[in-house]
Image (cartoon, rainbow, N blue to C red):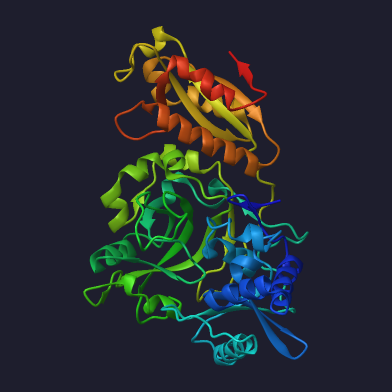
Length: 445
């Protein structure tokens, strides 16, 4: 079962509809249920809409996209944001209806009437609401012929030589059909230099009011951009609500006037932390905030461990990518370590009493270990890494364990290189503390 920050995703349209009708039934329930129904429906900007028995019924995307919802558990699940559930809703055959679409006014009027029927008025919002309506005759665009989601790795889409990186405030291809830049000259230069770009998008790890809670420091997805120049305000490449968001303007001007049109996009199913998967790009704060920069091979290989799923792009017809072979699923957490003082003494930043460690997650631990031991850093300092590993059932469990260990390593140690990297020095006596977090550890010399 796929999960978003510990919250189970709805598996199909049946789950989404069941959630919607469950919330709808609370509107006629106890006092606490009616209050819960009112707060969910009146406040959500993105609503799933279903026509049932001559009437429209509405429920928030975030509520419909998660399983096992209840009044008691929903309030605790604040980390996942609506944008992370949009691909689930769209993938199950619900098409977004924006303010510029012909069906929008009728849906909006029905939504207002639905709220009024239960004795409340929807809350004001600076963003126009978006409705997601099911087209029962439309096949699921994000599923393969056997009904399973099409899941890919970064290397199934592009190469390190063709891939770039940029920093964004958020990642919502369903609403943003272009990637804009703060200076016109940047967009024009990129349009002249290549026919297309693959650009990995990540969010700053620094908390800011314009960044959604839970998005900080995460790598969210990948755009494929054409060389077509677009005006983000005038060429209908953004959903209407983004043109009404004051955060997107500076001194009365749209922050990203020109950009490149997006033609395809992929979202990470379990967005990784930049600290673990884009250490070099994360350190290039200015470059990746004002333009796109080529990804390093090391960053590309680290990011290639994580799964992506294609999502629709605003203004583009959805054409799902098909794969001939299944993608390996990372489900082994590993800790690579070099404990030999003789070998580590050649590293400039090493201090006596420390060991070198690297935490990660992979489907083939031995292959991953071999690749690190053939890394230029390893060859330069003539050391070999051994490893301890723990097999976990399912990627979600493994990724959660990996995240916990990465945080622990960063807290107790320091980066092994002058520029941010995935290698850390920790005190030798702290290594058992890390291993104790595994359970069922297997050590390989």
